[in-house]
Structure formats: structure tokens, C-alpha cells
Length: 635
Image (cartoon, rainbow, N blue to C red; front, top):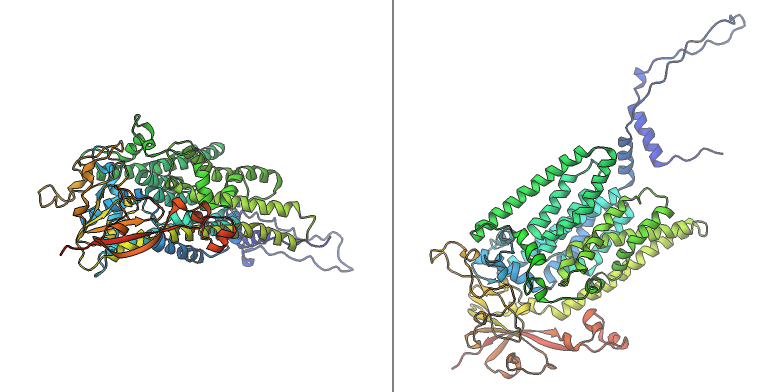
């Protein structure tokens, strides 16, 4: 047999050994044996050879050197950052607001702190205190920085904050991608970054002002630190990131750290180094306690009484009495999240689900050091999250946000295993070049489907429902008075879209729940202190969604009106079609708006050209009009 080719690892090991060997000048000289002579005595001897020196090379050094050589990201982190950012910026500037909770529970309180006015929900009443003023206050300060630019409207603050969300989310995604590539597999990392960029779910979640989105950011950072063990275990940092997302953001996100800590506990028990684990855990625990102390201090100062908001959130959502709690806002069947995730991630969802089957199979079939039992730990948080929230009666799309990166990661692992299995099972059938082509196809084809369906989903939402983000730019110069909203109250994009001289107000509609009230204004002039609305108990608030008639004003008190009109909807005495029958209003700005009630599932779910939609058997899209109007003054 001829000499075998040395692998990159063996070459690297030889280089390290050579590096540790003493220089030639320091090696003992050896005397060559004398040449033979006819008269040489048979008893002459050669000098003894020197004893070989033992060179110690740590296995860790070899492992680090080889991993640095082999596991480099396929795309440079800077390039990956720019690729992700390009999509996230599009989301920041064009995405709709999918949930009215984002507006009334976060944008409005932030607007109140920054500008002294805004809508107030019952969650901010000191009687209930299930929202953190520290979380909102930090964002209000950041938004206020954009107000320093002279001559800019308040929407500049709104989109400035979204810009920051997009940049920070991009950093978190890039950090996780780089860590996966360097520590697990370049292929898994590459699939992950494109799955994250292309999915509609990540597009909608990344630039939202929600605690669940903030928890999504910290989940990516915590997972990245857990995966990265090149310089030892980072338990303290992992604990801190999940504590930050759970305590400052959404407390339920703390459950995602459980499988990571369980693995570390098993690992240190096997290595008999549990004392080191305890030390690292205490460091992270002390940081979490310091964070909790800060949150409690700021919220207690705002509410003028001791409040532990993260605890209040858990108590309300889990231990509420009958007739209270989240279920009064609606319940959904167990399969709701499966349907919702299928809309937002399409092919990636089934791939994420089958990872629980493919990973154990890969242990038996594939001979690769990249797939170790540790992968089971990394894919488990997604299943834990999905199981917990699928079992709760009240479901909302935003509750899944912390698990979005986990879903993409699981799907990436599945695609990697499927490609590897294909190569392993066909190595005796096809040539290497053919196997590599098939492996690329099995990865690229699903990602292509994800890109097409996600683009169609995003465009369908933007074309159908983005009118509220545009019509509020139609105010005339020097606008003053009440801007009234009726049946479209839950699509109000926030007071950041209202001119300084106007205030949002509600008029009656068919909605029979509790609409938000208003934070008290001018409290400083009344001697109650700066932004006293944080601690004053508002009237008419309750946690049972019981309506309060005092939250509405008469239509006669409205200067401006935002309303929609759909031709196929029958007229109503409560929700009058002001656009058609009331001649006291003139249109300032209008935009078409999809009539979801009379548009088929396919037409409202995906963006498909009308001719192709009819060919596929879908119903024609029905449209209405969404308008900002101004009262015509009487002569």
C-alpha cells in the first residue's frame, strides 16, 4: 500500500508538535559511527543514542486548533449581518402592527412618558400592575433620542425605535448563526441563517414592541452562549440572558433555560465538578437578583407601592379566579399554533417537528462527531414551549415569538440530517459528485419553497392590511381636536401617528368589551407630580373586560374621524357608514383595505395574482376603503 494522505487534523497536530519541539541548537549532538576499516578492532563501539524527549501537547490545544481550522462560518459574520439586516429593515419600515396589545400596552405608555398623553389600559392601573414601567421607560428614553432631530414628526420616533429593534435582532441572529457554525456545523449554521432570513414569521416578529419579542432576542443570545464551549462553560451568561428576557420581558420565557441547565448538571456530575457548576450558577443568579431588584425598585417607584410585576403577570395568567384571567379574551383549539406556525413558517414547521425523530435515528446511522446526544438538548426547548402553550386555552400568535428561532434551528438540524442520511445511504450507488448534488437539492429545494411562500404571505399582509400605517399621514397643517375611532379602534397604530395638537378618542361601535381610557394630563401643573398617571388609580378600569360607557365621546365632539367602509357589509345604526351617507365629513386620505369576511382563505392568506387565484379555484378578493376624514365646518 502506498502512503496515506494526511488529514488536516493530523497535519495540524504535527505542526503543534513541531512547535513544542526544542530548536536544533538545543538538541544534543550525536556522533556518527566511525567508518569501517580493515584494521579496525572488532571490539570498537559506537556512542549511545540520546534518549528521545517526551513532548507534552494538550488535547484541548489540538482540539481548539483543529476546530478553528475546520469550523469557520460559510458566510462571514459581517456579510451575514448585512444580509439579515436588509430584510429586518424592510420589516421595520413596512410591516403592519399585528396585535393591538402592542399599541395600547407598550407604544401608548411609552408615548405618555415621552409626550405626556396616551391611552391607558387596565393593566397599568396600580390596582393590577401587570406591566413594567421599567421596560416601557427604557424604550421611551431611546425613542426620545430620535426627537432630538429638529423638524421631525413623532412618527420619526416610532420608526426610529423599530430601526433599533431591527438592528438588535440582526445582531442576535448573527451571533447565534456564528456560534452554530463554529461549534456544531457550518452546514447547520448556513441553513439556519437562510431559514431565519426567508421565513415570514421572523419578518413579522423581529421589529415589534412586545416583551415576547424581547424574550426572543435574549433566547438567541442565551442559546448562543450555551452552545459556545470553546472557552469553557458559560453558565453565568446563559442564566443572565434568560433572566433578562424573563424578568424584564416575559416571565414564561424562563422555562426555556431548563433543558440547558439540566444538561450542564448531568455533565458536571459525570465529571465530578459540581462545585464549578454551583459557582457559575451563583454568578448568574446574583446577576438575575440584581436585575430583579432594579425592576422592583423602578416599578414600585412608578406605582407608589411595592410591586413585583413578573410575579403579578404569572399570578394573573395562571392563577386567576373564574371570570378573570386571559380566557375571558377568547380561547382557541389545541391545534391553533400548528396552523399559525404553518402560515408563518410553512415547510420549516414539519421539518422542525420531525427533528425529534431524525436526531435519534442519526445517532445509529450516521458516523459523525457533529451529531452528539447534546443535539437532543438543543432541539428540546422548542417542543417544551409548543407543548406548554398548546395546552393553554387562550392563544395568541405573539406567544410563540420566543420559540421562533428555536423552530428555525430545529428545522436546520432536520435538513442537515436528511442530507447526510441521503449521502450515507447512496454512497455505494452514486458517485461523490452526484451525491453532493442530491444533498444540495434536498437542502435548497425546501428553502426555495420557504422563500416563495413566505414572500407571498408577507406581501398578502402588506397589501391587504397596511392602510392604518398610511392614512394617519394625511392630516392637514395645524391639525387640532379629537381624532375619533369607532369599529377600527383595534387597528389604531398609536399616538405617535397623531399631530401634537390632536388626541385620540373612541366613539361607540359593536365592540362590547373594555376599551382603553386615557392617562391623566397636566398632572404636574396640578401639583400631583411628573407623569402621575403611573400611580393615580384611573376610573372605570376592571380586569373582567366589562365595558365602561365613560370611555366614549359623542360623535359631535370629533374633529377628525378614521373609519372603514366595505360595500358588502350591511349598514348599522351603531356603526354608521360615514364614508357614504354622512355628508358632514370630507376625505383627507384613503387607502384600500381587504374585506377579509368576504374574501376566501387562499386570497387573504397568500399574495397570488387575481388571474392565477381564479385558476386555482379561489374566490375573488373583495376590497373596502380605509379613510381619514375631517368634519366639514358649518357655515
